[in-house]
Length: 303
Image (cartoon, rainbow, N blue to C red; front, side):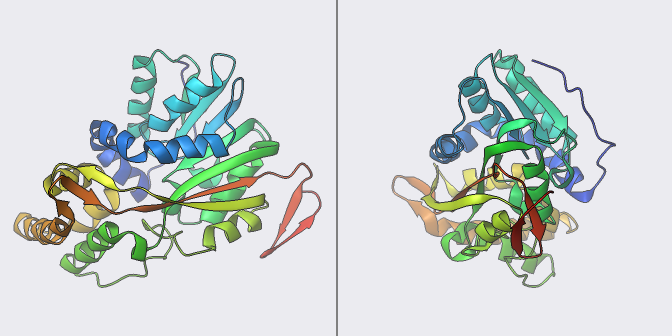
């Protein structure tokens, strides 16, 4: 595997720290995540038209599960750059690519809102369950479009809204209540479902200059043997939930997890635990001619 050759200054932000702490857990649960997101990942790579010989950027790549799928698709004549704000999680992405014997993958620590690559470098971009965590997703989309070649495609995957994701709604509302933080707008920037409002993400892609924007809804139930197995995953890998509960005493934290588990038991069936999830797959194209961003409107010109 190629070593990363580009590096920003250390990204010592609360978000980076949270995902550094969750990195090992996210990687440890990789088989569960892969099973859960397999149909969505296949659909993403098809919609982005990932193929042999392409140079692809995987934004907010995490431990690199989908990075490996991209690498197999582009082959040795292509390449994949996996970026993430967390240096620790990229350690796992690097190791996973090495373990898979893939020499066409490199990793690069980067804030998705400020990608430090040359303009027009990549043939396609993927962002699986990362864009919604950005404080300024429009800045992230503008940054991604800048590094795409004319005509290249971006495909993103985010959670739909709380009405379609009751497990996430339970996790967020219960954690906030036990932490004494009060209810929050589920669509506020940086949250798990922040881009789940109907039409929101499409509008942001268009404002960032993408064209031919479409969204597909995908039912993606999380299937595990027991509620406790889902909670093990959340405790290990769901950085936002863990952050809310971190300041509590051990006893208070245990009470919060017990409350969450009792509510999630509603999804236990005779054949196992089935947690409803709905995902949004959105694809957009970088225009062949450059587009200037002017507020919520677009006009042809030099960017």
